[in-house]
Amino acid sequence: SEVIALSSSMKLAHRQNSPKHGLDPANSPAQGKAQAGRIFDQSLRDRIVAIMFSKRSTRTRVASETAVYSLGGHPVFLGPSDIQLGVNESLYDTAKIVSSMADGIIARVGGHDEIELLAKESDVPVLNALSARYHPTQILADLQTMVEDPLLSVKMNASKSASESDGNAELGILAPLKGLKVAWVGDSNNILADMLVAYPRLGIDLSVAVPKGYDRDEVVWGEMQDGLRAPTSWRKGEVEWTNDPAQAVRDADVVVTDTWISMGDEASKEQRLRDFSGYQVTEALCKNAKPDWKFMHCLPRKQNEVDDEVFYGDRSIVFPEGENRRWTIQALVDKMFGRWEL
Ligand code: CP
Ligand code: NVA
Image 1 (cartoon, rainbow, N blue to C red):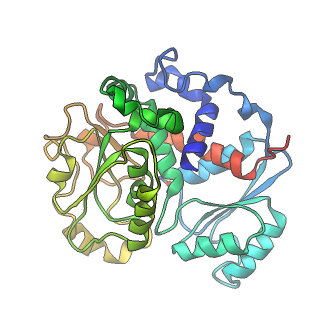
Image 2: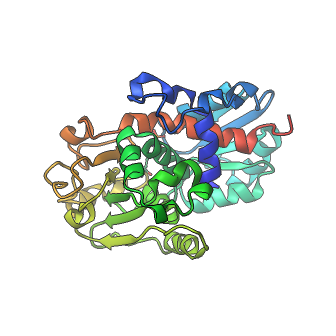
Image 3: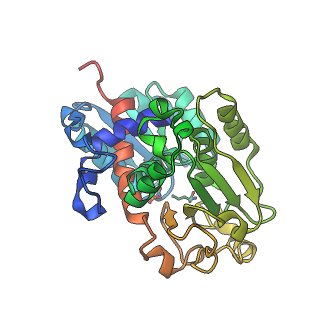
């Protein structure tokens, strides 16, 4: 489903052809998406989407509201201090009521069990806009960003041998990412979880460095293994798990990190700052990555996990990555809540 959603988003992401991303429209892997047209279809006309967030958000909230609006729908933002949820009313009752008045729900929650309960009890589709376990819409934007990065796509296309064309038809626009090595240096958190679930099955090698004691989530690991067991015509990516950041970034094409203190982890901040010593992404740490490695981060960012030189430097593709939240969410909103019978 990630592949379908991303294909759809590429059709919608018309602004990605703009020169500010450094893409030559004639050679862009996304060439043609501007003509796809569905963005103008107003597929959410007269539809209401409830955007129910129990945690802060800049990117996901703005992407969700603007995406719904662009497709002709009406977003209703429900923050934690706006509604009765959690103070005077249960999630079960809230799900029943909100889904009786809206055509879709985009929800940011605490525990992952909350999004599962919402999805079970709502009469309308529910999109996970972040739970403590997963952040799926972020990883769709990350995939789009890697596909659209001129350097990464050129490199990946150039290094393909004939046998590596296996699976190109099925993977579509994601095919150039097969064989890419992505390194994660950071917490065993919701961003890593969706990288583990999505990347190896798409043929992307993933090398993970987390501090000792920040173990993998067994549910996530099981999901990843289910994906690896599914038969495909292409080579699946390999996963390396280490406590050594320098080892993880060796020969990496892309280095990714995130905050060490996710929303909900604030109480263990001091302990975490100690435990993640040596995990800041810097040029020195990544000296054995590929010479032209790229840097990604979902944002919001703190200096703990990446210094300014990398974050604001030429390697960094964090701002196109942030903007791609809009286009990938718009694709999901269109697919999940849109009027496809039109
Ligand atoms: N990356 C991301 O989800 O950012 P926000 O928390 O600002 O939505
Ligand atoms: N891991 C972070 C991601 C924020 C977008 C968190 O859950 O707070």
